Image (spheres, rainbow, N blue to C red):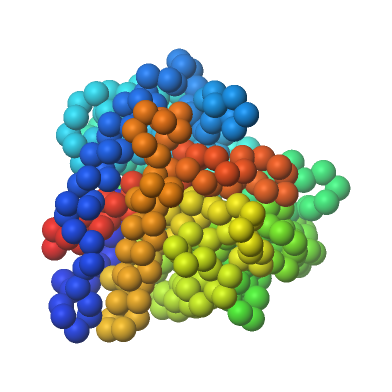
Length: 394
């Protein structure tokens, strides 16, 4: 989730045999400059005490979230990336103002999403400012996240609100919160956090993936025995479908786990997930997937958020392989970024409620956030642009 990740993962500079970069510094700079200007539009719209999430499709009004929402960290995190790029102090000021809302979530033991909420935000803030107070917040938050680990299951529990349906649900999204724990072990010197991270990744590797390397969304475990009870979906088309954003979470998560541990099993899984996604017969020409890989058609909503996550992950994965495989990941990421940066997906400045990207899908089966902007789509789009900028600078 942090800009530093790509620099740690990338190998030798690209040469002619490995495939040259196809996008230019001018392309990246234009889109980041546009993002800075557009987010100044958004800043003016965000009320005190809340974080922006999306816009109401019917009214065009801003939809906000409280600090305990899983999306709460993405707005300040995006601002921090844009500050890193532009060095414009007002962006940092707004980001740090919103971090004050998030700080209390360091004690929140009722969610698995503290990586999204705290590590994207306070982690980037610590990286860019060196403020040690942010490190303290993060270490407390990592301990809160670790409290949800069940050693019998070998996983961090995702949801508590499961009613009679599940006993110990673990979702593929949870792979994204492991980077937080890996960081905590590096900084604190306590191996507990990365041990939990690896156990969770290994349990997910064992149980979440089908023979074609697509992922289930929800695996439900028996918390007393660790046995798998159900393999379900919550946001996908059906239990055996491949929810697009879920596949992107898996790709990003195992790529990150290889960077942080150098365990080849994680790299191999990331490559397998990438192959599943890039070989999809239902993947549209522009590289922006439908909300689930099992559905297609002119009226089926796309998910720009899944595309942005995928592009960012593929850029990092490209630095872990060589030759034609590296070139394939780069070309796919470049194609996605080109599409997302086109008028078909990137909003004109001053429109779209101040958000960057259009046409994301949050929770289609729940009839929630369909074909709208989403704060996390913006975050991973900007992260992908920043990662590409790092490549151009090598």
